[in-house]
Image 1 (tube, rainbow, N blue to C red):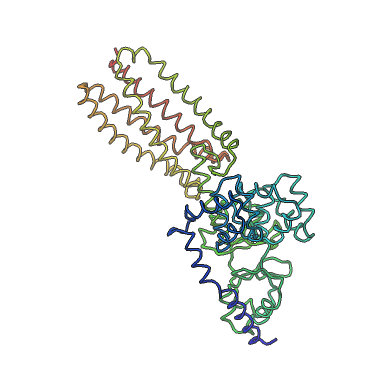
Image 2: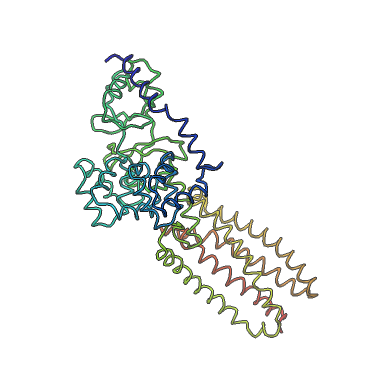
Length: 482
């Protein structure tokens, strides 16, 4: 077949795929609002049809939706309605829908499917999506599904599962295009058009040597604009960012962000090309890691509204118990000064202000530092400079707040000494908040402990304890409570 004939066939395929695009978009507008979210009345109509057993009506309503919107629909309806919805739309439960489902929702649906069907779904997914689906299953269910898969697909999944969780080995896709370096541009174009076993979607072609080590990449735009007789080694880009299979997925995301990558080659310990990571996977990582850090700072666990209640209670209760311990520690500090409080009751009224403002200041510093650690903005070379910076910020904020609260207290209660005590305590606790807000997460990070998990507890404890101690201690030393 000549190149002109192949071009004609490709144009026909594209025309066939896009001929119904406009009517489908028109139908979708009836179910989506201006923010591209499913309308509440549409979700309610689907639920009503499910309750009435009108499966044909459910099928007709869901059919125009994009796979991502169908996945959203599963998350919006009640948990006990998800399996009936899956049965009602039957053949619309495509691999694209399965790949877009929330992890907890997908796990619920997969529990109801036999291993053979799950294996069929996995074989149609990209390797990374198949791994993400199978890794959530129990060990026994994993083995049952793998036993039903074709040997080649099973080997790819088992190899990926052998890598630690949240690493490039788990994240990478094995659906990539790699060609030897002796090819010409024309050879490559013919190869891409004739080989039906190639990946269906890719942005660049990896050039490898005889040992299967990546030596360069060629963007599709370069290939299409270069003469057919030119060697790939003359047009390829030799500088490339290689991702080791054991690299943590958060570090992978930082590499993509720093170097503005669309895709990157993943290599094993011997430097051989074993997969690729694309930017669409990295977008999910960035979203997951950002959400994870925010939720961990509050001790809320995964924060997924589809997570089973039992797991949510377990996660939140654990950190609430830790907070209860730190609150008792702060209360014990107050107990040391109960005599002073009994003599001067205004101390009990004002001391929560000092600890509360310190806690807010510490949380601000902590949020900035945890983000800076996650994005590699804080390293061993600039840690002391960051400590000095945060202390200057804390001192400026503390003095401003101290003057305001001190002046207001002196005027409100007619007691200048009380105003001086609470203003001084505010400055001291803000400095403690700034120092704890940076030292706690940095120390945990140096000890290879995720600073987003436990930093908030220690920072809150420091600001509460020192807030009470500084305010009540200064009150006693100044003779205010004599």
